[in-house]
Every structure is written in structure tokens, then in C-alpha cells.
Amino acid sequence: MKNPIGALNKIFDSRIRLGVMSILIVNDSISFNELKQMLELTDGNLASHLNTLEQAQYLKVQKSFIGKKTNTTYIITDLGKQAFKAHLEALEKMIKSL
Image (cartoon, rainbow, N blue to C red; front, side):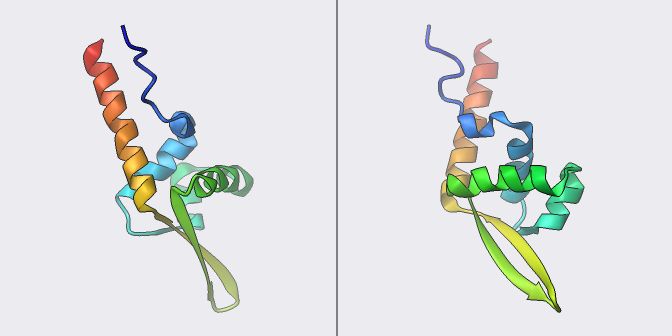
């Protein structure tokens, strides 16, 4: 029997990264503050997980200014969409095989 978790993406093991990707896949873009509020996280905790996703090239970061305040926005990349959809498909296959 094939390992049922073999096709799962290790990056999405974290419930926070799973939440970030779930939000990004249905939104064109989202700000750091919106993500922080939606996921109820601290700045440092969210930033750490976003950095992991950025290093994997699953999201891109856009920084701009609104007045004198920095506004950081996140957008899912095509690679991120592919990886996340493949992860969800692997989860579905795993559940259906049980």
C-alpha cells in the first residue's frame, strides 16, 4: 500500500500557512493587517509563516505607502496556486481511500 501522506506538501503542515493560502487563493490580494485580523495572530507569528511561503515562492509581497504608513500586500503566485491545489487534491484522495 502506498503511503497516504506521501503526496502532501510539508509546507502546508502548519495550520497558519494552510489558513494563509486558503485566504489568498480566493482573494486577488490581501494586506498583512487583514491576514493578521482574520487569522487572529501576532505580527511576529504571521510574519514568520509568510516568510516561509515567500521563500517557497508561493506568494509575492508588494509594499507601498498609504500616507506615511507602509502597506504590505500579499498575492498568491501561480506556483503557489498549483502547489496548494495539489495539496488539497492529495488530502481528498487520502480521505477517500480510508
